[in-house]
Length: 391
Image (cartoon, rainbow, N blue to C red):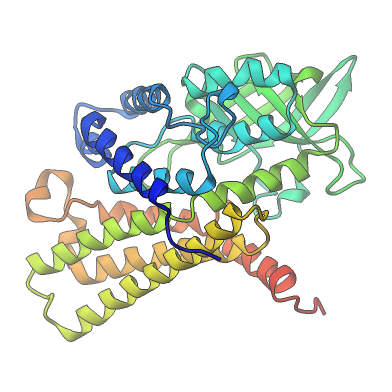
């Protein structure tokens, strides 16, 4: 296992940082604080940024060149994610399509599906959202009840999905639906469904942070064409789990880079309020710094395994639970150490750090739920990593 970066990988990092310095007009934090923006205009900022990245060859980098990629290694992909976070670049609006659906189409889709969907996905001409979670099937996704019933050559989907990230701005949704009620895992199929059709309704969900990035999606006999099934009928669960595992692997360096920037903001804040010299403050900051380094080292280990050709396993649950619980601890510590300063509004930013810590505190709770709750991750670790008995 080699945790060091090669000369070529470091050269890629330098070129990427130079490109970001020349092409990123404003950090994302400045965009969201601009009072002239609303949610719709911010989506367009993200769409324009995605097109810049795509034109420069920085999207789908690990994909074959024929599908818009450059055949890059998983290490280069991880470096890209790390530097985008460090530069505070906008997240592309089609992150679900590119991170999840794109790999699914390349590995499991048909040639016709790849030709039809991938170019528009990369160019942000069609935005995708994910139809996995349901009101009664979130962490236990395999219990989903949305069903797809045959209708001639095609299928009709009926049911409800919730927490549909970017649903209000999406054109298509990839849906896990049950095609066999008797088979818990083998009875799930992976469908590609257009949103703009009769039988599909997306309703925005206003979050506690004030945004409406989430939606809930209702299907009432919506048409799902047979040629838009990814893989075979009954393979949906296997496809979804494989893709989620690889997506977590590429993100192994992004989260430590993100939290590193947040830590700098906390340190600057306590320096401003004159408490950096206190022993208890320094101890709390040191704990966060050390935990972040542990997270990064564990991510590098996973990255080395992926670079060696090993498939991501249940160990990815360790990383997921670590970063999501760490985000909670970090935001709680920030509010504790910064005090009232952390609650000030944007208009008073001259008297506070750049981070909106009240918002981060609220958002951090979501990380312990989406992509598998902490409780589910602990079960996976106990059963599949530690091999603990179930009774």
